[in-house]
Length: 450
Ligand code: SF4
Ligand code: SF4
Image (cartoon, rainbow, N blue to C red; front, side, top):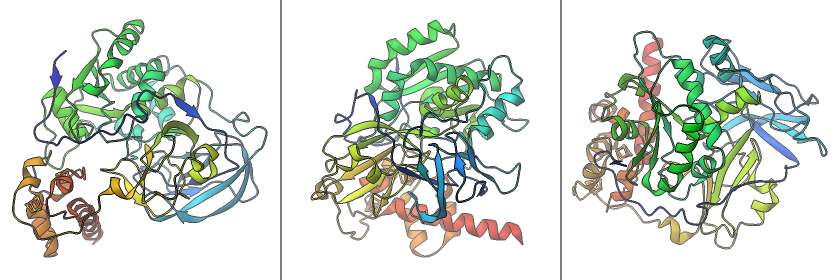
């Protein structure tokens, strides 16, 4: 099989061996879950339950403030009683309103209110899109973009390729790999449903070549589903950030997403492997997105593992994980991978729809260095997978010149962290770009309202 790749990028230590090949463990249900009502990119939700309400697992507890807006509903992940609705710290380091549910001791997972199963190939396209929307499915690779929107490209956009993103290029994380080993049937079914909804006849499952051992089982599933010739597997060189949508499209199809554009501008729809499994389960089981599979790893974790937990669970409420934390060594907590994840001040943060991992790092692992001055070495430019000039963007941001930063490509930055990793002066480039993008977006929104 040809090994595909994209231009530039960097080689990283993968640090996956601690959890590689480990099955996904189902953790005993916590006594309570704390579910953020907004776990998506888009318009805000509002709570649809009140303190004291008894809810079943799968009950819709939050939905869009404005019906029809870009949003994804949120569902109770356990059966129990709503005890509180109030703001608390979330994994993006902002406070957001959460619904606290005290789990029913006996029937937390069995007292359910799922939707009826739906045949994705017999229902109408509109019904199928509505099912993905009503299940609250969002991009589980990190972005949290509502998936139903991706499946309904605007008129004029010609889509000819569906891509299943199983690259999982972030160090430490192995949950997508575990899912592809455990649920290949659901993965292929999820791809087939997306193909059915979009009418596209060609799909590629993209993964890094460190997961080549998964290929025979996946090919077998493709044959069993009668989709040979329609779904193929694309192996890509293990190189960071291969899992970025733009880079995966570039490696698998040779196409470039234009500046400021989306995958659909290159004729592609990209969905994370976990998202595709969730889609299959929304049809087959009527199950909304109430559980999250994630990797818990890092050198301050005594027994790294892949786990399945109800959304809203906190590691501190999951005894198997809580007891695994080596508090003497714990120096940094990361939600997501070490390159694109966010650092958290505490473990008491709920697991969300887009939490692909929690990494418990020691001081040695974090290698915190003081910043020094830029030496104009150009390493950040050579390593930038998006072909940008991080050094110029940084100079512009330091001068508070957002327009110049935008001209240098700020909004095309995928915040992969590659430039900061490569920078000998240890300049926190990516953090600056993240803030710069937020400022630019806010300024553009204000200008649009005038
Ligand atoms: S963080 Fe942005 S600028 Fe830096 S390497 Fe990644 S895409 Fe390029
Ligand atoms: S890698 Fe760092 S030191 Fe080198 S040019 Fe870029 S910002 Fe400057």
